[in-house]
Length: 284
Image (cartoon, rainbow, N blue to C red; front, top):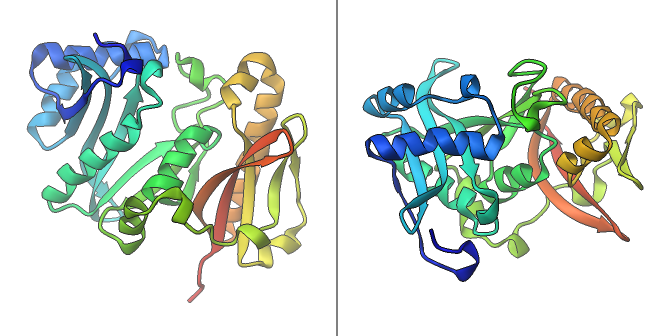
């Protein structure tokens, strides 16, 4: 396998054949550290591909270094494509492979006549939030508590498995604008006047603002630490505090009619934070 730091050409293509599908099983365990029982198995991948599932890989010198997997379903009586897994080897995470795999998935799904992809992700994972909201242009109006239970065998799932359910409207003006723009040209709606339901204070401490008065404004923000995995390893109680504080904040905001629309990263002196931006939906 080529060295990922040598700038070798990485190929994005559909995953085919027994050996390549078996490599997807192995990569799940490598990236997420999950047990065999938590792996999406070869047989399901084979069956899914026969009925329109997307299974796309990133290959470096013939070796699988990332993949995206999704399948077709129904949501609110609408045909949709649900993207269940996106994985990239740690050594390749500075190559924008997650972004490139999602673009390939978008192309495949649009060719099937489907205009929406949904998926879930942990809202405390800042890198995923940045990819999903800032670069791809998803939105979210649904928070799911312990979607996969209180824990799984993965090291990532030891402070609960809360998830945001996000929607990617593939051919919308919003998404097309995000895909065509650079981050420097993207505007941040409500950044300057968005009071925080949870603020990331010095030392990565969550400070909740439970004054209901701020729920009357057009915009809200919810802040998170940039490195929740480090906090989980070094200060597990603090990581749990972040789960509880943000769970309250997201559910309160969404129940009050807000829509999660954006995410950005910023510095306050030597302190870095992640910020979700929410907008109050128009009430009919």
